[in-house]
Length: 465
Image 1 (spheres, one colour):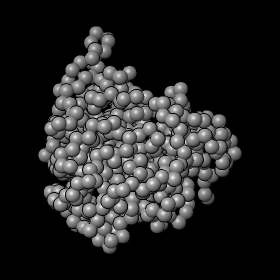
Image 2 (tube, helix red, strand yellow; image 1 turned 90 degrees about the horizontal axis):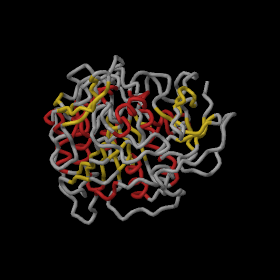
Image 3 (tube, one colour; image 1 turned 60 degrees about the vertical axis):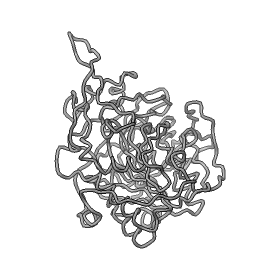
Image 4 (tube, one colour; image 1 turned 60 degrees about the horizontal axis):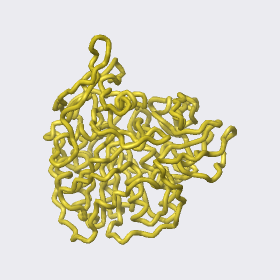
């Protein structure tokens, strides 16, 4: 049985919402940091050599967790936690420990974000949960040994590292992946206005094929958390997603993802699995492409689309877990970059690598502002790779997820979604299109493209936040 679809109001939308189900109300406007409302202007394609944008989405790392000691970047190896002394919490300095990429899963839902944030103190990370058992203690105060993530450091050294990229919302993977295709999750449902927050009630499926009793959560503009009062996760945003802008202009796109199966990254991190028009339409078979390694085939066959999202399997995602020896995320990213870099696509491609949320790990930078939709969230790393990016660029412009979407909009003349892309600064200022295209140098890594092509599909349980 096909589930009833729900139509969402856009972040800054003022047009009426067409309700697909009873009980839907008209949208409200969600102003953001004083940004003006912007409609979908036709837009003109920028004069740049970029014809392909590849967005790689990794998992659950704060900026300090991966790049605390990167030269020239705003990282930190000391932080603060709340130490209980005589029944009261005292803000106490702590040295971050160097650890491996493998580890425990620190809680990172909305409440944990607020706990970590501590009214701007950025010192409550020890009081959040961990692996579903008690509080994290000093565990989140760590950074990864640079030797274990050398491909990321090499990419940062050879291209650009952004140290002011913030999540759209202080929440987990579900909304983060939605933000990376839509820029926002604002809605009006059953008379309640707000934004989706955290994750659907079905812990193994976050999309249109979930059990029909599955619900979502709403965060109101007043900050009220309405648990399980949101719609079934089969969504239609009034402002649309990047898919709508791309289709309207005839710009090709694909979403490379692990196979869609319960309890895998295909069921949780596949943002378009929660978009009704895609999941129940022909693009589910043509534009959502699995397994994720199909991107290698498309590069080899000269069929890489103009815009790509690349979603990893659990074991290649950088997602922390207690098991060791399966954390191949840096090599996975390097293999895709190398495939593009050694192909005819290199001189016309921009690759963006971003992590979807902070994963509960410490970061010292306070988010620059609060909006009415639960953001901004904490810093996450972003790498920008292109022959038109000067080596060793440290981009310290304030960015958010829609900064990537805005670059896509500008590059292909798509106009605007009218969500957080209105306020966001495009990552276009990282590029120097007047420079001669740089020759690609292969990124050294522990595992090759062939390794990933021959991996069996991952069925390991993954992030439920």
